[in-house]
Amino acid sequence: MKQILQTFLAATGCFHAVTLAFAEKLTFTDPAPPVVQELPKPASLEAKTFERLTVHKAPGPLSSKAVTQDWPRFLGATDNAISTETHLLKKWPKGGPAKVWEIDIGTGYTCPTVVGGRMYIFHRLEDRETVECIDPETGKRFWIYQYPLVLLQLQVLLALIHHLLNHSQLPKAF
Image 1 (spheres, rainbow, N blue to C red):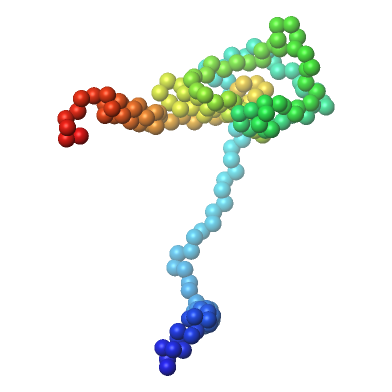
Image 2: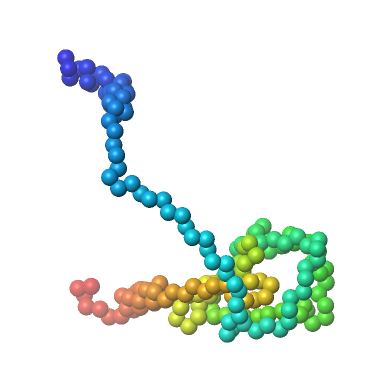
């Protein structure tokens, strides 16, 4: 009879309710509760010049009526390569706009992105992938992060193995 009652309670969900009621009576004290720590305030970053930056002239002020827009990815925020910024020049001066600054960058296939008043450049310098955070008005750098080309080296190794397996005379055991 006891087994029939347990089967009935389990099938109807009553067993779960009884288990929860019993569990609520138990108390558990964590012997080592986590300690929540306050994070220190981040240091204010100051943009600084660096060896690959060439400054041509000081940036001019934007119109007080200008409305700017982030360019967070390839083709911009609207994915159509059209900026919704306002009060820009309708026609370029002869010879194009004057250069304010330029940066020598390495190789890569991404466009710069601009988000929250910062420009991010992802490219390869020598044998390191590089991400830089730039002040878009002055070209000065806030920070740089670099890491080795491990993935590229792995891709080259896999391509070599593929070539050897498909284009070389290997013993029949392979």
